[in-house]
Image (cartoon, rainbow, N blue to C red; front, top):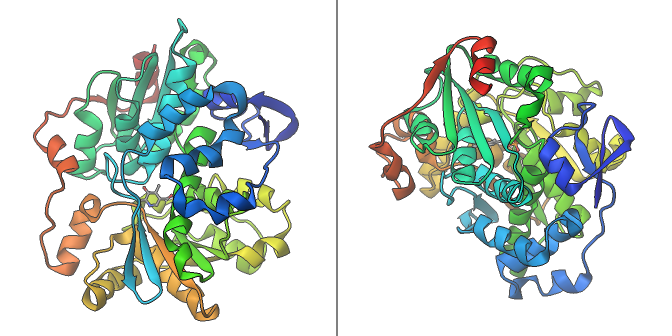
Length: 428
Ligand SMILES: *Cc1c(COP(=O)(O)O)cnc(C)c1O
C-alpha cells in the first residue's frame, strides 16, 4: 500500500516510510492511495469474531507487505490489551468507553500500535528515531506509556509548566528508560512551536525526528478499530447507528469515516466541539477560517485548526454536499458542558467527563433530527483525568483506579527548559 501527500499526489511512499516520516517532506499529510471495502460476509459474521480478528481485517490492507502477517497480529494483540465496552446510559444512548487502557485515554490505542510498528521497522537498524511530542495533557502520557522500552526509539515530551494536572504530569515524568520529559516555561502553544521548529531544523536532520500525534498514519488508522467494536456490540438491536465524537484534531472521527468507507454500516457522524468551532462555522458559513485556540474545560480539544479535517475532505473528494449527508458538527461552551455533566449524573448516575459530555450533547442534538436510531458518544478519557472539574460539579470523590495509583507515588523526573536553543542543545 502506498500513501500520497495531500500537498502533492505524485509524492508517494510506502506504509513504512510514511510512519517513519510522520509528515511528508512537503508538509502534507499522508493518505492511502486505495481504500477497498471489506466483504459482506465479514460484516454478517462480525459478532463471531474476536476484537483482534476484526482489527486485523480492518488494518491489513493499509499495512500491506511492510509488516509480515504474524508480526502484525502480535502488534494488534499487544495494542488491544483492554476492553472497549458500549455502556447503556439511557434509552437508545450508549457511551463507548475508550478509557480502559494503561493511561486511561483513547490515545493508548494509537500510541501502542504506532510504537510497535516503529519498533519493528527499527529492530535491526543501527539508527534511532526520536519521537518528539508536545502535549496539553493526555497525548504525552499515552505516548510515554506506549513507547516505553521500545528499542531504537527515544521519546521526548514537551509539556507546559503548571498547565497539566498532577496525575498527567506523573504519567509523563515517572517512567524513565527511553522517555524524557521537558517542562517548558510557557503555554501549550510554546511547546508546539518548539516542536514544529525542530522538525524543520536542518541541523537536527540526523536525529530522525518523527511525530506521534494523529497526523502519523500509524496513530490515526488504528482508531478505526473501536468503531468496528461498537457495531459488533450493538448490531443485535438492528437500528441505524449515529456516532458522536468529541473532536479536537478530528483524528478519531476521520478514522470512523474510514471505517464506514470499508463498509461498516454507520448512518451518521457527529463532530462535537467545544468553543473551538472552526468546523461547525465552516459547515454553516461555507468558508474555512481557523482561529487561534481558546482554553476550555475539555482542553484536549482546544484546537483552532484541526489537522485531520483535510483528510476528511479528501475522503469526500472535497464535495461538501456528499459530506453533509454523513456528517454534522456542533459546538458547545463550557457552561452547558458543566450543566450536562451534572444532568447526566442526576438522571442516569453515569459519570461523564468534559469531553464525553460534549459528545453527548452533539449526539442528543442529532437524534432529535433523526428518529429511530441508536446513538453512541465516545467517552475519550476516564473522569479521574479531569477530577478537578468533575468532583466539585458532582460533589463526590472519585476512587483512584489502579492504573493511576501506580504512578502516584513515583518521583517526577524532568528537565526545565525555556527556549528553543535549550531544546536543540538537549536533542543534540
Ligand atoms: C485527543 C482527545 C480528544 C480529541 O480527539 P481528536 O482525534 O484530536 O479529535 C478528545 N478527548 C480526549 C480526552 C482527548 O485526549
